Image 1 (cartoon, rainbow, N blue to C red):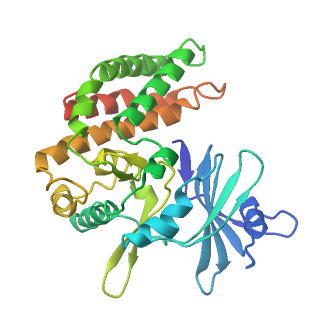
Image 2 (image 1 turned 90 degrees about the vertical axis):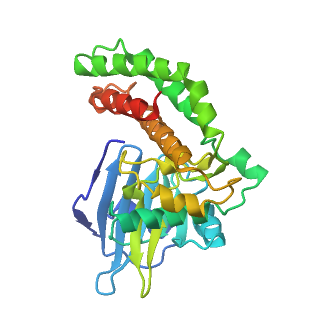
Amino acid sequence: MAETQGAPAAALSDVHPHPAAQAWHASGGALPVERVESLRQGRHCRVERLVIDDADRCSVIAKWQDRPFGFERRVQEEILPSVGLPSLAVYGEWTEGANAFWMFFEDAGDECFQPSDDDRRLVAQWLGALHNWAWRRSDTEALPDRGPSGYLEHLQSAHRTMAGCLGEARLAGASRSALHDLLRQLDGLEGAWSHVESRCTVAPRTLVHGDLADKNARIRRRAASRDLLVFDWEMVGIGVPCVDLAQGTFGSLSPDLDVYRQLARGWRHIPARDDLEQLAAVGKIFRLLAAIDWEARSLPHAWCDGREFWPFPEWLCDARLDADL
């Protein structure tokens, strides 16, 4: 999750066209690009704004990543409209070799989600509508498991990678201490996994965004309403909605649980507040396990000194205490 945001805009030239502008035109984008604004820079993902016309405030979002986009286009073009939720137009895709994939979206604007009561209610309403979507059996075959089994795989994958790299000389001092602590905690959490599974039995299996965070959402104002626009469906899957209900971790949107429980679809009955709080606490652990596994992808590389792991032991400890695990 190491990334930077808000890098300066890059002016275009005929001699050195920007890679995002080149991919845009290769995908069939006919409109010329005046300049490119870097919105997010990471090792595995980059997001750029292609400014088409400054005067008309016309722009396109270009997202590059090192793996295929999978389900994202279907979510925006089919699933969100089918349950009455706003979506973003997808303008095209382009592939450059085996590890370079581009997708071009409507620009959602710059009004970010705020952790206010109004915005948390809006998120709860959005989730309630999303859970109206009736997934098919084929969707469970095409999408990852975002229930306890899927996050146990994250735990085990991260554990294997960290244990395999622990002896590296470049991972010394605070980094080695953090990895030792995390391995110990992951062992304890795996030993208590039956309790995680039992807490999840109260919830139905739904479509799960998987990274419902402020970086992946914008607010769009209309004459009589405010819409929540959600993008970056890379972690989408089918499972219990724990991770999307998570409160106060990694910029999570922290939906209002009281509003959600009145709107929840697909449940056998209106969920109890206590059940939702337990699911949200488990969801906080799920988010951390996915993040640890993501960061662990960097550990085998010689340039990684492990400092990304320094805060995780405390975060995971706090989340386990909240969930009584």
